[in-house]
Amino acid sequence: MKPCVIWLTGLSGAGKSTIAAALCDLFAEVGHPAILLDGDAVRDAIGDENCGHDPESRLKNAYRICRFARMLAEQGFPVIVATMSLYHEIHDWNRKNLPGYFETYLDVSPEVLRKRDPKGLYRRAEQGRETNMVGLHIVVQAPKAPHLRLTNNGDLSEVPKMVRRVFEAALAALGESCGR
Image (cartoon, rainbow, N blue to C red; front, side, top):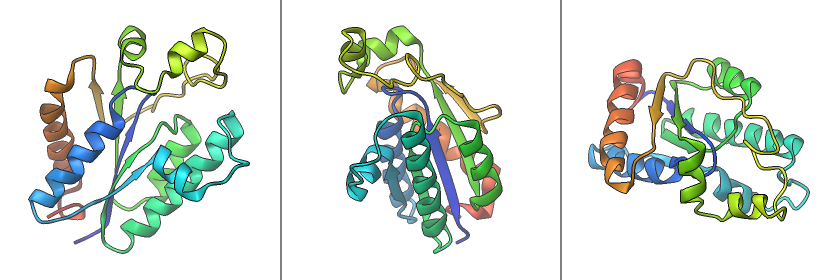
């Protein structure tokens, strides 16, 4: 199997981790176990106390994830990445450097993001207890031309349909490069 990286991006609460985990399950079901790189998990695993959530640190962490994804994909694994990494330079780097790259942008309305708020980040930001929130304090650089753009304003019942859509679109675009 040729290498591929399916990159899921969007704001906090967009459903990246949920969809990515289900996508990994789907790859396993068809006989191609995938590796999941979740932005928060990578940050935790590296444990770099000097890497915060300011724009410079976010960019540094995004490049780490890009390079890990490339390393794993070059070993023949399908790699599913779930990370905010909302910087045009990251998307551009990925297109030039990641084998079998497929970018999916999860677009969610601000009202739904605030309602979901799985980590309480929006609530804390509105109370002045959270800074460096992408979409509030840091400008969002949504992908200019994602391979797939999904509006994810629904509830968890929509996840299987969205996962199938990402899976089928990635395989159609990448063919032999990912999972076949």
